[in-house]
Image (tube, rainbow, N blue to C red; front, side, top):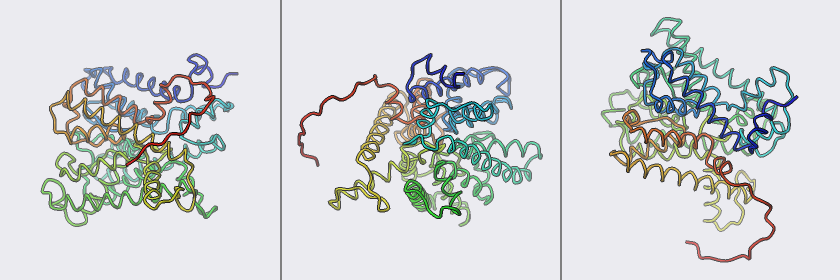
Length: 450
């Protein structure tokens, strides 16, 4: 009996990166068609194809940028379609396919494991199925806990049935770093800016979703192992440092801003500063009006969004490990060291090259899209750059210009979200022609650097 991916692979003769690209494209296409239907909208009028495509891409790529308000434009059916796209897009369609294979007791073939290795950004197939089981278990438990806590809090503001539905939607959305909300009027969580429970639950969901499942596994097994892998150490250090630094910077620049933090008490200021820093981990929810923030805050948030979450997570960006590798390489060069070392471990040269390649490809994508949008749209440069990086990092934060963008800009941002979710390197591997073996090496040359 053929495995659940063999038919797909034989039909298209695709490499693992190309299968991932094709799989996400098919998922987005199906989601777009469903969201265009009258039953998916609250008014029964259907949705324009470009808006449906944008919404489906944003949901499947767990971004959160919207061109129509999710809470008021879409019906319950439409919102559930978006929620399913978020869940499958966040965990990965290969992970969901594995779930069905395990339920049906089907064998996971070598080809399937190669696909899972690519989808989870792993360097080895060893233990990949065991990791997928943990991914599914941790995700469902964390989402359920978040949904329950949300429902308890929302029950004070709305009927219990509605509170449960809101809890489930936002629990799934926040853990998958999607940032979609159904409160209406594009207000996200601004109504809960000083609410400790909503802030803490949301930040916990965002961080756990953005750490990556390998790190979550290490954290869960800490009691037995009493040790972390190098990967987990780097991720935890980078995540903690960026969140604290981001919160301090936002707190300083927004403290006296009458349109954001100034009306809040000291506790509300601290909460909102940490929330806005955490949400740049590619989550997209906000408790302050992003469009009213000062330019210094927006620019620093652009940097945080570009770095993004961690490998094997529900988030995007160049990833925290890529950033830390480049920082370590810079430090080694400044100190005159040949080896790049993190936590007393030397990093292989291929890791440095991969980090540099991902960063340069990502930077090139952001710059090209920003330049095109600046040509198409008559908007402030910083706001366009913010929107572009938000799309690339699958963040979903917006200064408020997304809804009024031209159709060509929406299409371009949809492609940017798609590339950002899959990763620029995966896209490059998927698009490159098949190459033969390298039979010789060119002579070494020397150029002057710096």
